[in-house]
Length: 402
Ligand code: PMP
Image 1 (cartoon, rainbow, N blue to C red):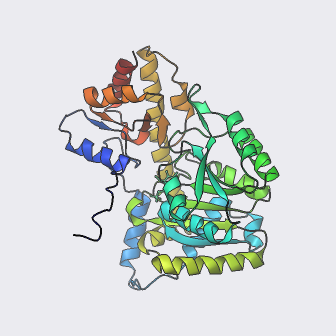
Image 2 (cartoon, protein in one colour; image 1 turned 120 degrees about the vertical axis):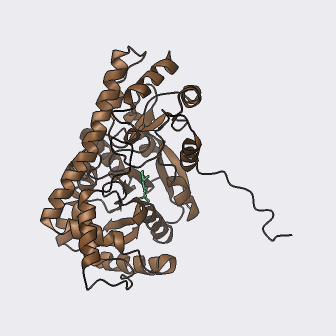
Image 3 (tube, protein in one colour; image 1 turned 90 degrees about the horizontal axis):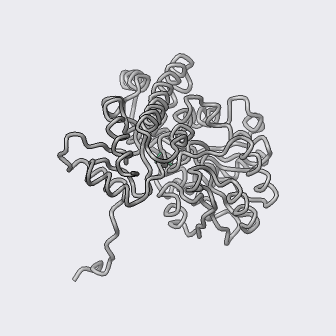
């Protein structure tokens, strides 16, 4: 018998399973609102024109080779990533108290950040994540030995933020807890704190000496404005917090499979920054030796060239404005159908995802009767909507909530 015959079978990943069921469905008007990847108005993946251009330049460079990158990644990529998230003239950069490592996209940044904290943050600390959060957050922290708990976040009654509950949770968490915060475009709800609410969150975190762990997977993709989407992170830095931030270039560059990401630490002083840098290199060496080069080269080229950068911003606007337009059209359709309930949350929410407020039994009907695929919590990916199917989806919602 196999040494591993007692290994319990793990359930398949919910989101990837949903896509597989969608693919197997032969119904003509089927709609996939599960997947967290941008689609154009024809429902097709979109390679950003600026990425195509950068890629051609890289491939045509006669000097291109496939040597290893440094352990913590391409230096020009890291420097540009730091400037992108913190703002180019952030004093922390000049003070040399910021360090970064290139990671396996946002997931890898979360992992390396979690791994580092498991070694060097106070023992026995608990990681608090929003209720709900991205399905991978708890497993990532649990895998390196952390206990995770929820803080209140989403209020099903208002389909908005439960700010009172959130502040209470942070107040009641043990002093010095690690608090995972979505920098913008909260996944899965699409509900973000306002700037005033972020200030109140920072007040409690400062008082309780909590450590901010920012996850930023949608900078520029959320609002079309890179600075606006980085506001919360920059605000915490300005307030004097030590913190880390995970960046993903999956959504905002459309580089999903290239796995380009970055983990940045903002520290109190430059001496500590050097120490942290050395430990990140040591941890990364044992995990992956060196990060992948191609995606990082594309990002670096675009971020470091002002003409390409401007073009990227235009591409970002194309994506985020199409999503905002789908929010608006879904809202208008539901209002015109006089669908029971209020639907302002569809246009109030931000980013790729929206919590519709649909209940699991309604999700079941919409799946079976209309071949519309979404997760049981009622989350839809706005990117799956297009001018061709938004009306069909609105009618399906209208039917199942009546
Ligand atoms: N964090 C959040 C909140 C996300 O939504 C995602 C993407 N689904 C990620 C991190 C990381 O994704 P990736 O590893 O593809 O960059």
